[in-house]
Image (cartoon, rainbow, N blue to C red):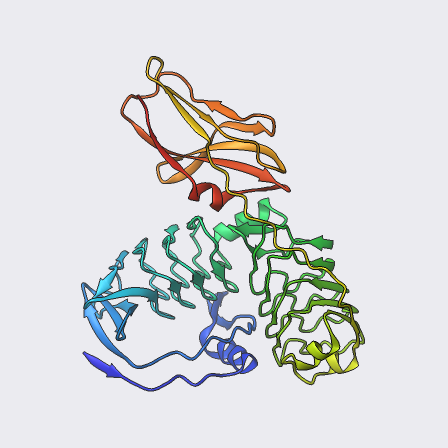
Length: 425
């Protein structure tokens, strides 16, 4: 065992970005190691007061009430399979430590316990043999670059809930490339992961609750963006270097983070919530335009919010609109069956449900071989029941969920959360 103590010094977002650029973010190009693009995510202080322990071929950072898996034990670094235990030495394993399994080129399989809440930055970067990963149901945060440059990763199974996905988590993976090729924007269970192909005047869909750091970064095709009421933070790098972006409306955002609107040379109009309480010192770095800021609150609230003295804010014409009404976030739709009938003569099951306001289509999804698959095609918005085919295998059980399409988006994670288990009679 080895005791490690002390505190990692907290650095500003810009300093962290430079450190990552020149030290911790290598990318492979033409057989040479090159620095990756600058990112500006500043993480909280890392507590270094842990004890290093080893168990079952793995190393852990053990704290008083939890542990982080931090890598393979020496002599085990060429392992092809990683099985993380749910606990070690009497405490739960709640995180994969930063940089822990980077460059494990033989790794093909990862099994996460349901205790993992955070997967740290660069934790599985450059694991070139990894083709598929199933993230745990307990996961809350995926830190930046977590699976970057996993060159064969084409399948990612997310838990059926919102996960905060930080910048470049899946960059240079076949999975993300496929998502971007088939969608104008990529939404994963309420998180807008990528909007690099969005263009013109863009309204973020109402079912989005979190816009991931860097989601629009370097997009030169967008001219205006409106956030829905459910999004309450503008993350690092969100609109960094969006050179043709002229207008942004953030009706419910309470925090604007580092480089969120950095180097936006055309920005002329910004509308922000009256509940805005914090603007990072580098939020508008290299954005030196003269713009109109409409603040949906009083002048006294504007004066009291934590904000930097920067060129963009100092040059802005600030307008106060206390009459502006910000709608409440759209209530979460929770599709579920109202009735299930079993026909033992023909070995069939009928699923029924009530009309869901705003739904244009429904779908029945069944979990087969670990994946949710739609059965019977897409159903119209005026269909409120579904009968399975005849002669299903008696005694066999299935997990079944009801999906609803509202405002052009399918209710994925809410549907799966309400899934039922049925057994053929």
